[in-house]
Image (tube, rainbow, N blue to C red):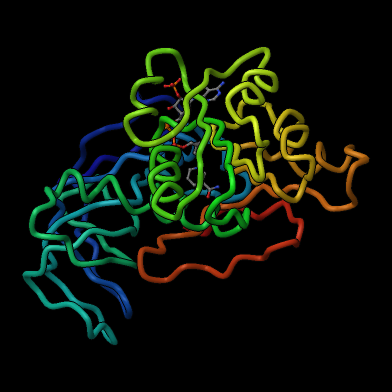
Length: 279
Ligand SMILES: NC(=O)c1ccc[n+]([C@@H]2O[C@H](COP(=O)([O-])OP(=O)(O)OC[C@H]3O[C@@H](n4cnc5c(N)ncnc54)[C@H](OP(=O)(O)O)[C@@H]3O)[C@@H](O)[C@H]2O)c1
């Protein structure tokens, strides 16, 4: 089959379309004929070698976590799906004609394969970090990096949960943020004052999705390190420890895995710098 692989770490230019052996579904897995693959920031970090120490790869390696397609092999112990079903989910080496998924859900009929392939990692991440930060209906959440894949999922799920969302994005994405229900503001210098200007009752919790070095500002706005969660800034826990406001620290959380079906348990209140994703 044809697949996209890389033989050396680097930018997108190291990706090659090559012929490889077809993968097969193991126990608890399905194989799909891929109709669309989802592209995540994580894919680029792995390909660039940022995770080479924590997650050594045998090169050449496949790439991609998310995909949508039609099931053509069902592994042992799988009882909820049959060959021929249209599904979307997460697995491994999904930029390929065939890919093995470790978690999946039925693709709604009215949803295209392309749209479905964009959901798994961003939406699983959004739900996981909203639950971890512990924000509830009637409260206000600040999202740093609200216009991207994870951020736009966070905004919409939070709004559906009755949470007011202040989101940061570049000037060109202010209208987009407004259209999905966030109160928009821009990132960059003066963030704390701008957020206070639009969230006059204060900010109850904050999510750092862009990893742009704003942990101190987010702690200043929430007044409480444990109300800040980052998915992209691994210096977050050490920065929070410098805060004298609270003995608790903010958290930097790892990838939750391919959990469209199986969400990993959160660890509220437990500070940790997580190990690399197991993929
Ligand atoms: N730990 C985990 O579990 C986990 C899971 C999924 C993703 N991630 C990580 O989370 C990050 C975001 O992923 P994604 O898929 O949402 O990426 P994405 O779709 O590329 O979105 C990134 C967003 O960041 C915004 N941005 C850029 N510079 C910014 C700044 N200085 N301040 C605030 N926002 C800024 C951009 O907005 P503009 O276009 O408006 O500039 C863009 O929309 C990546 O680093 C990814 O690897 C971690």
